[in-house]
Image (cartoon, rainbow over all chains, first blue to last red; front, side, top):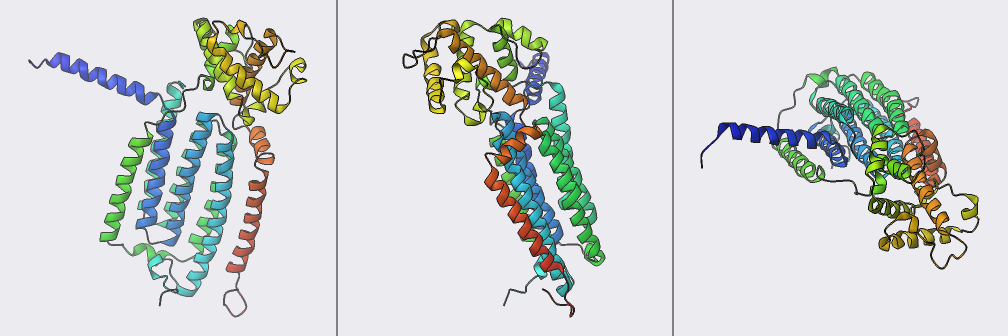
Length: 124
Length: 293
């Protein structure tokens, strides 16, 4: 078998073109992939950061990624149900942010810190 | 559903912005900058909502997150004196490394699986095809047909028509879709909800042995109807389905869904907000001696 550079090049071009065509056809899969990536970034934030406020922001990111998955399913199934649930998730996110930040504020008044590994009131 | 190059470019652009700013949210050491990057990420996702026909959701996302939640975050950050916290560099630990590796593995696993997910290939889920179907039956679709639809109408064969009729009738079994079904009075008067469902189901299976949509006959249990009325039913179903797609995500449609089908969850979430307000005020207020509560 001889190596033919020209043939190889045209094969590469064909492959690239078909990949581009497939990538340009944005569908449910691409939206779900974006949602997964955002969710996992939020999860990484929760796992690695120690500032309680940044952890809350990461949780907001995760909830938002879930909303994106809901909305993309709603569009690709032509169903409104998937657009109603993000509202409920947003309400929960708002409640959680308000209550969580109030708790952080209270802890800060007592401990002068917002680092989660220094919150050890319940430890004995 | 083909969307065209504008859709794809917008999607990839906003996806890149969303991912980059989400990474900055968890990387940057200054909480104020984190919060501002979170706003950017949420705005990019709001653009994706617009692409997904969730217009009302996109507006609420900007109003609620950028307007309310982020202001709350920034206020708390500025209320607390975090200057000293920022300076402390956190050293990488074993646990952190394991956490990041696990998250990375999860991203690879889930994206490779989910990127292959395709929407259900129902013919009744392609607006252009539905519009061409209506044109090929000699009907006008809900909006003015585009050139692609006029071109597609010529390509629809009798076999395609039968497939589309079956898919449309099946899609109409969904109560959410039935809300958009506008029937002429001579058909509607004879049908209760159960009868309509039964008729749609029987008609959908009856398309199997036919060669032409015009041969569609009413089932023997419904002697009052004639074939022409059945064709009218198919057309009305296709038109209803198109209306459903066109109104997906508008304020009116979402409001109807929230106040009719999902009224109880909506009210319960209102109650949740109320209790959160009361709880937050209780937590955050100062007593005269400086204690909690």
